[in-house]
Image (cartoon, rainbow, N blue to C red; front, side, top):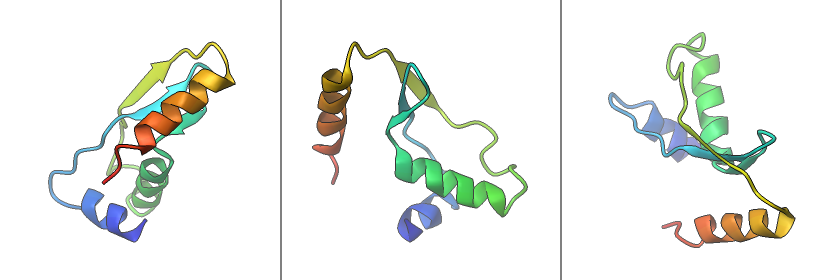
Length: 76
């Protein structure tokens, strides 16, 4: 988490969009969300006024879990 906060606190940070389901539950990007929250808390919310979000409708929990597994299998 500290590494992510440090990277996002640079001069030109880029954030990969958070993936959320139709109910607003984060499927992929919990660490990015927490890092942005921490940075915004120290800057009165001005560091990241907008965070990119991809909203997907999932038919069921199995589809949601498959997407989560797919997203996490590409982590470096």
